[in-house]
Amino acid sequence: MSTAADIAQAAPRLAVSALGTDALLFESLAPLSHEAQERILMVADQASQWRGVEEAVPGMNNLMLIFDSTQVSSAEMQSRVQQAWLSPVHVRRKAREFELPVVYGGERGLDLEHVAAHNGISMADVIELHSSAIYTVYFLGAHPGFAYLGGLDARLHTPRRAQPRLKVPAGSVSIGGAQAGVQAQTLPSGWNLIGHTDRRFFDPASATPALLAPGDIVRFRAVKALP
Amino acid sequence: MIEILSTGGLTTVQDAGRRGYRRFGVGIGGPLDSLAATIGNLMLGNDPEAAFLEVVIFPLKLRLRQAARIAVTGSDAQVEVDGQRFPPWWSVPVQPGQVVTLRAPANGGVAYVCVSGGIDVPPMLGSRSTDLKAGFGGFHGRTLRKGDVLDVLPGMHAHGSRRFGVLPPCAGLPMPREGDGNASSATIVRVLPAAQWDCFSEAVRNEFLAATWQITPDSNRIGLRLSGPEIKPVQGMELLSHGIIPGVIQIPPHGQPIVMQCDAQTAGGYPKLATVIAADMWRLAQTPIGGKLRFQCVDMEEALAANRQVRDYVARVQRAMELLY
Image (cartoon, rainbow over all chains, first blue to last red; front, side):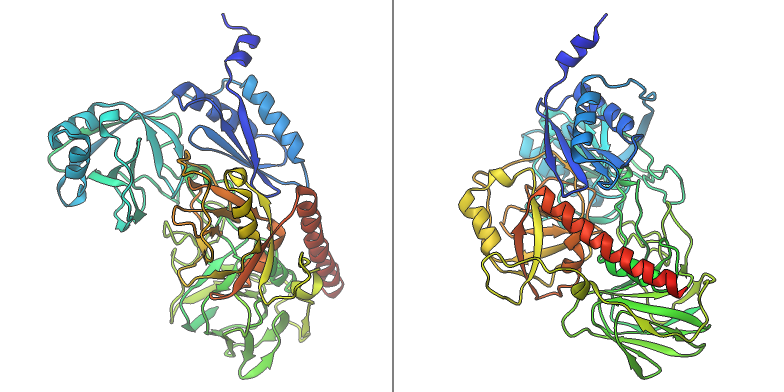
């Protein structure tokens, strides 16, 4: 059984910086990992309940806290986060699993060939590697409903395009460096497009507007055509 | 009801903003100049949550189909009701059928048309603000066009003939002082250092603070893109994506800063040099495309004091309005 001291010892240090007067950014100094990200999500859940906190927003290995500086001080927020970081409260809900059908390549997967060429593998390999991995939702951000997925096979890592495309349709399955994702809105993007799915990732009429939540598990399944 | 007769382009329905949904990737939206919008609602005795029109591109022409009181705040846009001019930062009654025209401001930025009761659009995720990125909220999730007809919620103070103005923030708030004593036409905005401040050499930071920056035409509600000397970190860096807020000054690889605005992405990964303090965001919103900016670095204490000055100004207007309504 691990003691509180063990947990505290296992916790990497946090770097803190200000984003103006009413926001702080906490960044883990240890490399990105599932465990570290779990800790970030737990602290975010905890912090969002505190008085004076407007929102706790998890990022990739980091946490942004937005608070009301007329109610609580930056110093108080820093010490509370550091404390929660050392002994997080384990109340994460169970991860849900999603399987997303994907048509790879074609007009909606313009960079499939580029991703293959960049990594010196075949397009069939790209499809095989991408659809056999198990992904974890690290956090949602950038645009409404967009999930940053961890778990991309290293043989598929491909840098973002130097020149972003101005209009990437919602549902585009993409790779940005070491991250995987699915475009949730039709917007500009510099990520490499390898296919598309027809799932809707964002519904503003719902109180929980995003399909995916941090911690969820995502798999892609290659299909010839979407129903 | 309000009928849009013509618009210069970027006119949207906004309210105080959509908070608490960043973790779904949804930004706060709301007004670029939240101080002006707050004062506009106060001048009508409106709820602070009431929705209004934000006008970024002029002119705007609209017709009231009902009696209402309006307040126009923000820039020094010229306002006419059926051809009769009245000053900006005024609250006036408008009769059914009268036409309200906003012409381009001489030296300002965005303007707000607030109406007694507020614009009646269905709240989405707790706000009436338009999210142009995801196409929801506001009026059908889009900018307003000629022919659109907006409902107005019943207002407590729609009637009454009183006309009055308030002292705008540029007169009611102290200006940031010029460090070098030189007067310049540039808007001065104060910044706090952000996470990567120390990743830029002292010489580069000094250049950032000494330069006069120009706001380029590809600026929008997502970000103000600036042109000036090349600002680059000591060495190139890859950051993991993290939350950002309006006011954050990002330095993309080409070295020209972007000041994030209210429709900014909720997460970003460019180096962050500094953050414009909340108390000066209205100064940014009131500097037009092509206008000049200078940055002044302050410490946390000074930034909090500037916040207090803004709160005191709002409280003074609020007290005056409580006597009126």
